Amino acid sequence: MRIVKLGCLLLPVGAVTVACVWLLSWIPVAPWNARPNMPETLTALLDATPTLEASAPLPTATPNVVFIYQKLSSPDWQDRLTAAWMLPARHDISTRNRVTILAGMLDREVAAPLNAPPAGNPNKPTSTLLKMEFAQMLAGLGQESKPALRQAVLARSGETQEWLVLALGYGGAHEITPRLQDLLHYSTHWDVRMVAAQLLGTLQAHEAIPDLKQALADPFSIQVQQDGSSFSLFPVRERAAAALEQLGVTVQHAGGDTFRVK
Image 1 (cartoon, helix red, strand yellow):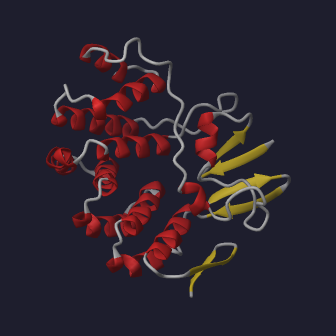
Image 2 (cartoon, rainbow, N blue to C red):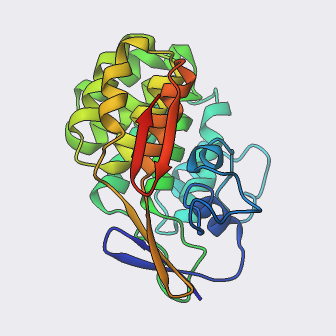
């Protein structure tokens, strides 16, 4: 059995499921030089576009708004995710209300995060993946959502505010580059730092090159145990290295925890 330790959590890797595939899409399970059937870097895996497995399709193609709201408040994460996926295309619900709903989903996930997969339930996704999903849904609402999204940012603080800023970044808001640089430096949440690094590369923020170089030494690691051996992965460093490459800076993985700018 393969065991992945995320922070202080040990995650069993069992039968292949859609959710597990997504989790493993950014957590390789073999050492750097022993991955013959996988991309060589965590960066390449992160570039994939996997999806979570949601619950069964809703009864009709266009369920009424009351039904959607009921699903959004369901205790079942699959019901909530299914309903949330519908929001970007539901133009019968005002843009402001859709922003409010999705920001509320982030509030909920930050306040009561869905834990990593426990033993015997590998289908349950991690909180990080849900927060990334909700942030990208907010970005998918389009340009007309930006005023309401900015108001949501100003109305919140802490981790939820950070994810709402990332949603603006996913939506291509170049003007929030300084805020992304701040998140890369100062956020206490590794997944926020990871996405901030990714977006700085996507947004071609050349002014962030010094910040990304510093992030090559980000302390967060994922400890992986396999076949009696143990090694560490560094998702924030990997994202920073990929962003630097996008900005024309060559980065070499020198092995272990070391990334060097050529």
